[in-house]
Image (cartoon, one colour):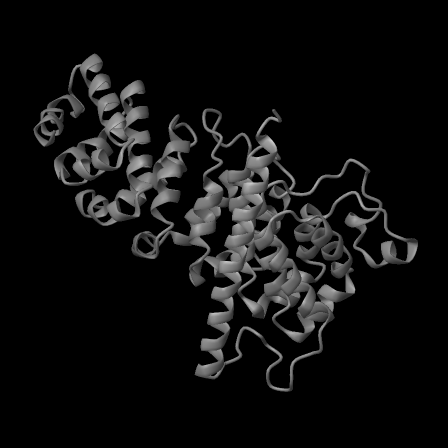
Length: 379
């Protein structure tokens, strides 16, 4: 099998005959569909380099399959190191293709880069390359512009730019760019939460980016203030068609008042959980907690908790409700992101967290068994 992979090398060359080149690229793509196939290719540095070159070539079918093969290879975290070693500058090469408005396989390049950047080491390597090129801020702004512009690339939807940005926003230097009040970047991302209801990849990436930005507690009052007004954007996907009393309605932001009877909540449980986590982060400081309370957040969470079918999302909702209705922390502990816990208490909390996860897993299994029983036809 290894010999077969090596034999493909001449046909992956840029000057190979087009039909043979396309067939070779298609065969490599098929290999990346299995674990053994990906492992085999990871050991063939020359094949990986040829694949990267072909993915950037003008040859239509061969370039498409080569780009998709890179997506599959990058989806395996165990292959990130051999990929980056075999193809120096791979991340920057992919990013340049992503931001090329004429490149037909920009979505595949974005997906490969999103897969690579999920892990800390490749993400740090990409940021180091951006810093070395002294154009990191510019490229990040272009990335956001491409994500927010439906017509940026007429031949690629660029949905995978969103998870790419989410991965990059785990880095403090990226959050600094996104949260720069003079750049108007975060406000552009807020608009995307209401777009593309059919695509959870894009929505999840945008919400993940917003959540990561909420780790920066120094920006909380700005995020919650009128310049950004992030809270209604985070709450709206969690809201349903509930009919609140006049008194309760007045406590809600304008965007959450008098919602239509057919209003639906965010259908993806992982995205609902990230939205709750983002709001939880905004309650880390005393001013943040007060601003979140004052906008009727508890009312939306109360109804969400009654409706929520997923145990882990319901648990996240419960924890946020406890913060909102509980007593304020003692003096000196107002910033929950900066509190240093004693080692023994930290250990106890970790054990409790583990027990919660085990309980959630049991509940999931029980729910799955009930659903399977409902599918069994009656005799």
